Length: 619
Image (cartoon, rainbow, N blue to C red; front, side, top):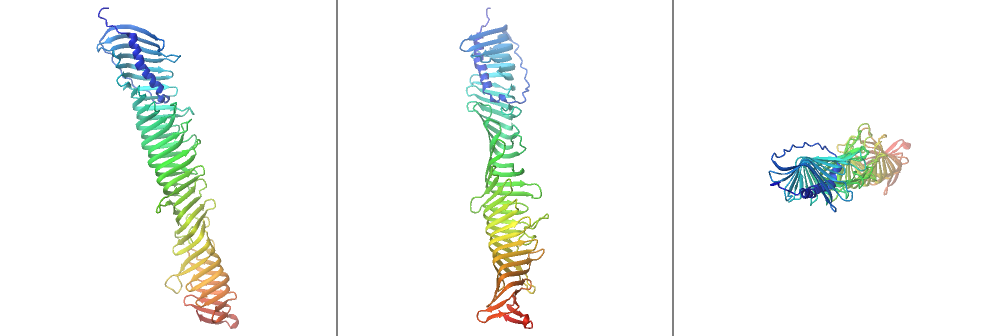
């Protein structure tokens, strides 16, 4: 009719389909996140239709056929030109594009479609629904802007497929860039391929994804669930596999908190850090490697399920498919706190770096530089060395390089770990140290030196039996004891040495064997064996007995005999068993007993067969 404005409905429908629907198709196909589930319920805003409409056509149904482009079908209750000059389709609008080669159709439904004559802007309104294969997208408005080649909605969007669900309040898709942006209350959830019962879940304030690079970013209030593992952060970046079906790399940043749990294992590894990088096995969503940086704090069950808190600037750990820890490396100043059960208490270990070999079940702390050392502290002992190694399964320990230790007295019914008395701590230095937990034995090697108060022992090797408190020394053993004479004011020193030494706490006795030497004041005693008896509750010397080829030198005199007894408080040494006193200038003097008085240097010769005569010699 005259004055009716005609417009090519088929042509416009064709362009609408090419620009808007093809773009949405790309969204659907590219949108890997369609595998995720979430909470897709979105309030769809009511959109009022302009009241002024002109030259409408009722019950429009139009088909466009193009052999090399497939087939397009368009349906609507009305089509007209609105008062604003835009072309309108209204009422049960349905646009269907049938692809070539039996490709499933793309279907868009809505209440309205509005567009300008140059197709610079196309807008779908009112309960917009997009269907492709098994994927559904729902929103109340979808707009295409040609200048930016972008499709947007700010009215809420939800999508769902057999692989999962997702939702957001706003969405933008740049067609040429294949870049997708979800904003405001983003919820995405994916069912894993390996285990249909588990999901990968992400929430955040925004999500951006570039299909060309297979990379994406979630920002602000981020939370992540991967099976039984979970994390939260300010930002999450990810790389997908080539098929876009699962994660390859996940990078969490800004106030990261995470918990990594593998399979059916009850072992939980919790982590706090400035950033956390996760890599997964190619065919699962299970973490195979994690790398934390910037103020890391991790809790790992390192030894027999005992949780260990690891603090370090950076940490890297790997796992096998069963979730067992394999290599772990921490650097930049590391501290580990083990909160053990029972009466062993808390143990703290630190060093410049930490290396854990899960397969060999070892944990090694190392320190670089001349002054830097690794340290370990527990209620029972303190230890420092260049390197400290611990067995995760058996509890063994090894320290190497300038070893220093402080051993605390025994408590709780245990035998004293003190040197000769259990009331004071024992200080130790050595080249290296080994602790064998099964045998409850500590071995210090390389010029080992023990001291407790003024009492000292040094040897090539010194070992302590934790269960009994006994101590053994091997190779160039030297010991030093102090005592206060009965008649003296100042303490006096007694030095005893030998090739071997053994302290038996249950007997309160110290044994020195082979090439033994004792020095007290001006006297020097040699023997094959020296036995020292100590007081019940202290390291005070009571008596010392020397046996086998005994020799005593005091001044110019030398005494020889089979046995000698040293009464320590009285400072007297009695030589027995055929004793003889020899002076190279005056010859020999024999008697039944020779007594060396250390305080005044006198030697008493007692002869019972001659009316118990006593001869006094000044040495």
